[in-house]
Amino acid sequence: MARYQFPELSKPPRAKKRQVLLVASGDLRLSANQNCWEKQKEMEDDLVRAVADAGYELVRAHPYKPAQKHGFIGSQKEGMEVFAGIDPNARLIVAEAVWQYSHHVLAGLLAHRGPILTVANWSGTWPGLVGMLNLNASMTKAGKKYSTLWSEDFSDKAFLKNLKKWLEKGSVRHRTNHVTPLKKVKVSGAERRLGKALAEQLRREKAIMGIFDEGCMGMYNAIIPDELLNPAGGYKERLSQSALYYETTQVSDEAARAVRKWLDDRGMTFDTGPNEEEDLTDAQILTQCKMYIAAMRIADDFGCDLIGIQYQQGLKDLLPASDLVEGMLNNADRPPVTSRDGKRVLYKDEPLVHFNEVDECAGLDGLMTYRVHKAMGQPVENTLHDIRWGDWDRSGTVSDYVWVFLISGAVPPAHLVGGWKGASSQRQPAMYFRLGGGSIKGISKPGEIVWSRVFVESGRLKMDLGRAGVVALPEEETERRWQETTPQWPIMHAVTYGISRDQMMARHKANHIQVVYAASAKEADKALLAKAAMAEAMGIETAVCGTRKGGKPWS
Image (cartoon, rainbow, N blue to C red; front, side, top):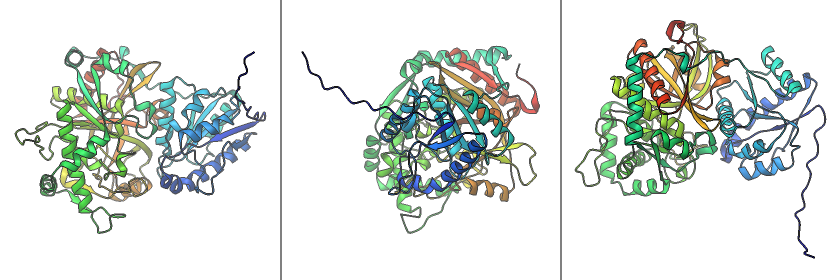
């Protein structure tokens, strides 16, 4: 008779009848987890009270770690260990007041059988809203059911009502009546023909998406499976950040100084200092200029139509941040880069579309946007932003709810008030970037934009599009919003047409949102419809959200 050594399987304790478990996913970087823990603790204390008032007990499923000075799940392995000790049928809240790496908890959440609720604090201090949206989108891609809530202080009537409903029923839904399937939207013949022609061109001629290492910061939602991307005409060139590092080291100081001089001549300002651990230094900027040249040359080597640099992990330990690089790449007016033999100017007079944080959904969106706007004679520069936060304008200048769209990299100076002259560069926060590097900081200019997002759901590509206006706010109000978020980064004051704060949060399937300007409201409407037609012709399930400017419906 065979004798086998069977594994010993422990059984997690069952949660009590009116007990709710809480987990908190964090960053991979210890410095970020330590800096952000205070706000997370405040949020959890508020949640404990709210759950208790509803007649339930909220219990942390993993402890505060005194040696590390925070209570976040800090890795995928730790997340798996935590979930191994959790009752799989318990009510579970994922509470986020910070940016978090979704893959830390995704394995446990996908196996969890009980009701799941993601919750974020409505605050710009640390990007908890951004972290929650990413986790939501990751579970959407994976086909996992969940509910989601958000609140400023967890005491408002709407939050408490929905929380009680989830505690008792196991789910809560939000109204998304602002979403209109494209088949119900009237698209004129010209825009429809253009969209179809561009889709056919992409399928026939195909495009190469250069990816400097996949899966930045645990963003499972930002990876498009090849079997979905390829039929649309997109193909990945899987590149390595180590190759980008090496190529950066091969660029001469002379070539880098030429890039810096170009930026100085255009009027961009750099907020520099002598201490490389705290200040932006000229040496950091010079290295960023080398990285810019290196990225262009590698893209040319492989025939890439667009590229994405991960930069948050791995590369951050070797080079300054890539944000200055990304903004230059996304701008049509940028420092010229020649091939290694000096005989060709690379990607002359056009952007090399860059998708920040290797968000492939944003990359496909950016490529489509570039081609649609180029064909229509509209501004081609486009970028993603985080949906970082939002608030009413306290200056009284604008009566609408104003979003703070904010991202560290990829924003082109063409989007900013004053262009290059309106752009400045400040050192990236040390808790994220030990080796520094400068951002492209500025205020997005007033105007009409199209926003969009490609995402994966039910095993297929989908796309939402909408219209918004970028508004001008007084300097004091802008500064308040910067200080509530990250003042080193470029900011956009956006008003979404026909979409409330809660409707956007209920529907949007990403932490990122793609934006592009058009010359007028009428032209922005046409550009939206042409891109929607292109997406439909590419096999992407498409919906238009909100209204046109002034409240006019799309249908």
